[in-house]
Length: 231
Ligand SMILES: *Cc1c(COP(=O)(O)O)cnc(C)c1O
Image (spheres, helix red, strand yellow):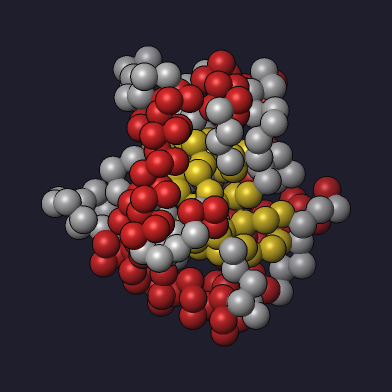
């Protein structure tokens, strides 16, 4: 199957999941997680109408930017971001989905201020409480969202989460439901209902994420094929 065919198949499945949940399929964006895929694959996905492309390594993103891999679609940063690399991402990514600490928010603000721009971000939630993952605990999320409101060169547009690897089918539904509740609460109480992006769901579970309320899914291998980590 080609990348275009895969995207069409994912769109069909997204639409079915949305309708089953009584939702409008048009309100859910498909982000292609294009890590470890070359500029040619990115261009194919853009030609097939992907809504955005997401990268999770700064070095790879920078190299592919130099090849104009993302022309025609918004670029998102979705990976773990180190503070000393923030400068290379602010202003290049339309949305930084992985803002997972107050220090990172402050650094994004500082770099955006230097450029005279406002950087759109999502707050990453570590909903499984995993030590191996970055992101705010549910308890830390509220204070972080309050703090972010005071950083004038940052605009928080919603939440992102990567739940633990599911042990059984639909195993992540409870996590998705919890993050959806946090999204609604924080948007209502702190952001005047201004949140627009609830980014959750990947190749194996995007339909469950849509059932729980995702407005953005990040799909990699189901679009681009299995990644060759040995390369
Ligand atoms: C790779 C990646 C995805 C997509 O994963 P698949 O299982 O290949 O769909 C989604 N989100 C993030 C943050 C990723 O790094």
